[in-house]
Length: 391
Image (cartoon, one colour):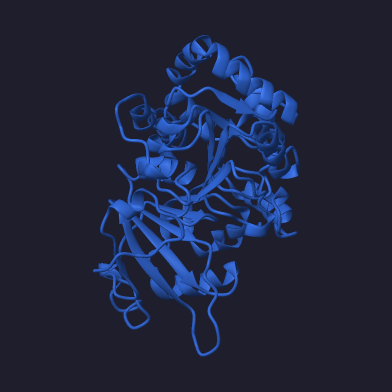
């Protein structure tokens, strides 16, 4: 038994995980054909473009809840192999009823070869897709139902494959039901499938409400000058780095905290200022502690193709922690939360919002959070999805 190393610490790191290559019952080249009676029977196969051990977000929230009634295999994007290596797979018991399959192949379609070797049971109740890039694997199983949970418009992301649009069209043609991660995505997909349902990002409220209690503030931000304006999440092409730099210049006595891993941008792309603090990767379990140290939470997203359809999960998490929020005018944020989130376009507007919040407080704003939070939870979202799927 060993602990699997992951790129980003999340809930999964709080557990001792069993990782094995070709030795789980029914797996392995040597016994794939001979021990089918011992093979694990999965109720659901999930195909996910995100590493299970990366940022804890929609797939982890939903799949862990669905796993209470289903045995689930989650297949991640492949890890390429080099010369003198061969196609294989690594299986990780991540959480109760959840096994992660990390395949060592050079292209997603080659996962089909690994499936033939390691997964004798092709009859599976549910195929659950987070990325159209896996759509070629539909024929590798005999799914009773196919689900497409569209959490992002991946074709618009930096470095996206040109094939994604055609792959999504194919996946939509095979899907029995489509879920979307926000209203803008719903409006984009509703005309392309007869059974589309909007399930915007939700929240694990009790976890983030810990920030309202006497939990400690992490040492790496505890001594920063106030106000502390913070963000957590992936730092990539969706973040308006120029805006952050300009706001930091206009507010030299404020501290700006950026928590999270870099993706598709380089460290040298980050604006460097004495009052901008890049904390790095932090786990889901300690996010409430960092929120405790924020005076204001921010969502400094750029307005570009990659943010056109996003519905940030962190919006409700910030609310649950009771933090006033400043955001750029992301469509779903402006539409759903514009009445209680400070919406800004420019560095001057951002600076004015900081001044208003620190001077006058935000009691009315935070009281409006309660109404929003009372009507959503990941538990409710997962239950409604499962009900629709069963029906």
